[in-house]
Image 1: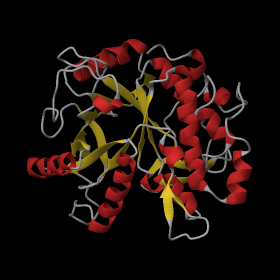
Image 2: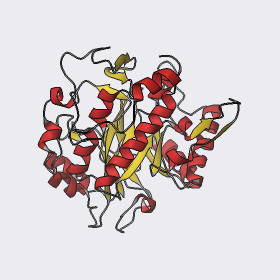
Image 3: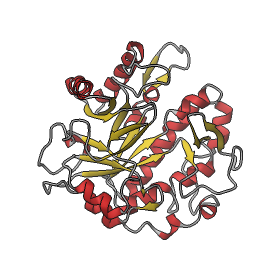
Image 4: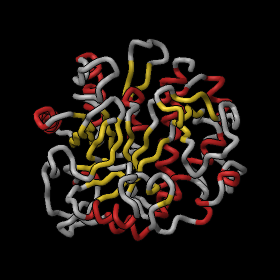
Length: 352
């Protein structure tokens, strides 16, 4: 297992109501017209993922125009394939205008693959990731990189490579093929480019901490104290303490200040491409095909299922109404969200 240094408003009653209510008819219609039919008829899982990200952005910024959005993975959907010549592509400009940054996992160093000791990302994969990262950067997106390293030497190399490209780096300590972001201090102990300034937007961020697993902290208060004793510009956490109890608005506010006293950003992680059976929305009788948007389980993690994210049922859970996941995150007081699961579009593109 990779142990990495990573990184309430009282959540509205409607957000915490049982998933049986969440899964039923929304208070508002979904923002995308006939998403199921369009996806099936046109077979455009990539475009449907772009649509979902755009809809999340549009909905969230109705409540907070400065709400930040970072996507994780899914770099390939930054480009649109030419309908006539599939060897040609062009930037998905409208899509890229809907969010603020991208987090790339393992650009230079990835977690060890079972049976293989190498953690260096292969040249072909890295070349593609770099090209797409620079495509986003040229259009004003902030590029974050989460690399993995087992020792200080590799970590320093990772930081140097990313800083030379103008990317914002974080290197998690990797000690196995699986990884969890559960340690307060990163492999270099202190933030790179540590600074005392207030951070009011992603453009000012120089470092970040990925800390989505709080299981080593008994109470929310303990977790908040731990985070408050760091000077990272951006903290990425889960919505729920130990995956169960949503952080109070007071807890989120407590995390929004560095040890030095300056303001920083706190983002929540949300998976939009997979349903996780430990989340508040999951019902005991859910399984593949029931409800219809639940697809097969992810081989590397049987607690997660791919979802047909274009379906109205999943969209109601994620966005567009006051019962939705994103609405709860906004009301908790988070400064933004990091959207994971975008790579699930590849699963549906390949026919599952």
